[in-house]
Image (cartoon, rainbow, N blue to C red; front, side, top):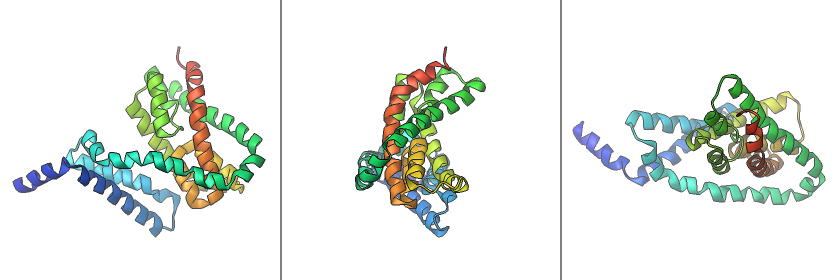
Length: 239
């Protein structure tokens, strides 16, 4: 047992172990997702988070140690986000025809996402730091963290809330939109992108290419609008 502990101590300090664990966890999540015919509840990101969280907890590994190994995946978030412009470029004619509805939906969706979350948290007595951390939860993670820092929030908490928002949106969006009988792929995708950023956008791309294109647009525009409006919306709840 002592030898095993020593080997683990050595391996856990190396970056390759945690990069491999991250890829393996997502691979398992994706396999489960495919096995249940892409059911939203078996979201591969959710499964990967649970597996990695459990592994870190069981081994007593600090998050900072894990991140040193997994930061290459974090770096790829930037290029992956830029690649979302490709399906958007393929659907530019559809975007031009829906410019006014897109602008209206963006404003309403962004303000509603912030106001509803802040109102609920405020009603339960959340303090100013928690409210500032919560306000940008529907923006993509790098933008949300920067917004929260600028408003006096806690970046780590914001990151967790952003991930939870994205996973929740990816899981419930398709069943909810089906229940509402919303059939326009542009509207479906844009709603998911505004509400649940990159994780929701990835799910929209799996459902339909047009939905994925408009989800990418919604994610990008909501990040900009949230950065502009979040301080003003927060001001209504913080004295």
